[in-house]
Image 1 (cartoon, rainbow, N blue to C red):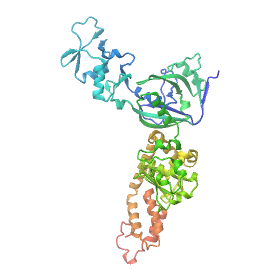
Image 2 (cartoon, rainbow, N blue to C red; image 1 turned 180 degrees about the vertical axis):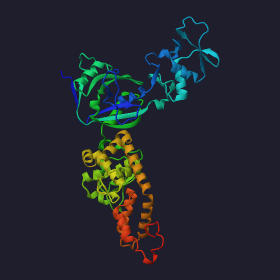
Image 3 (tube, helix red, strand yellow; image 1 turned 90 degrees about the vertical axis):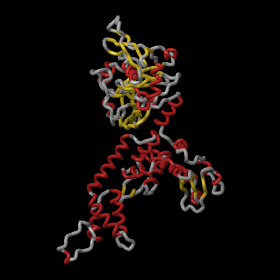
Image 4 (spheres, helix red, strand yellow; image 1 turned 90 degrees about the horizontal axis):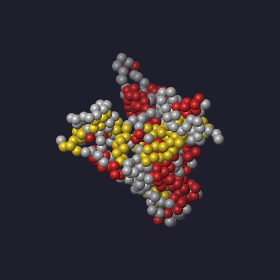
Length: 511
């Protein structure tokens, strides 16, 4: 049986981490002699479980398989001069407990501490430690689930912080050849098996697949496939990072539903789930097949006989208005119009700033004269372009990916993860930063040009169209082009009077 597994282009893998990076570099899992690798899984919910396991230790304080141990007294020792449970002891010390060694020591190598509270000798149980974590660090306790306390060094990590991290989504850009160690061979299955990793690397594989499992606070252990990707494989992946808080799944249905939302691209069938709570929820097909006479009985739809265009979304009133023109279209066109108007509620929830940011970055095509030259639906306004892009993403994603790939990637992030990737956020920030630098550098030049253009921007000016085009260019690009310089110099600046030649020049381009 073949031991070669090929992951084709477009396959998606996930890595959960508390670190922040654009591209992982890997660690030598089996020790310094092992080839470095990064572990992935095909399940984002599984990947999230690894977030709480990194850069920290975990104290298991309750196991539902052994509930009686919850109130058993804990024993703390000094072994060869070192505390055996420094994290728990540090927590207890921070909240009124003290520890002392007995005066009579029978075994100096292993000495049991005496614990005190308010100066009185006492016993400390796991339940006492759990109560401290619940009262002071935001933890929740249920006798149905395993309970862990998270520590970094000797510092207790609040529950919300312990579960913060990032999901790294890795897409295969060039096929990966992986050694399948699930099949049984001389190398074994251990993720610390140096011989397995090195031999697979020597044979030219991009990584190894093993059967793996992760500890879960809710499910005890979750079995899954582990993908150890070598540096050669990492070069064949593209990465996007999304901040997340590891979900505390209460049952398998929640876990499976989370995976479906993240891994499955949403479509028209998911529109109702994607709409914000205040958006109208009505059967689209019923509205598509309705007439002007009976559409008004559909909740969330209003007929406006004065409306000049086919439809409009009143996002502040949670309704969609249909005009007479809507009923002149065929059913397919009506369906897209309704989807577009409903998508206005989604784009509004994203915020108008995102529409402008995406426009400035060229997501909706090139910008000419300060405006979008031809957006996804032929319009020039950023909000309309974003709304139509969402509608196309849901209805014809291949078309959007082909013609507006950057718009596709931004919308894909928002609809699946609920926010942009760290890389996309950085792209916006860097663009804004460079634009601000450019504007500051040209501040005086811009001020002079704006003052001159505005002073001549009157209805009776024969150059008003050129002036307004120049103003748009300055506002959107933060620069004064050669054409604008020529307009100001040759058309808007009056010729100098020879009698005034000896007078000092104004610092302004025009008076």
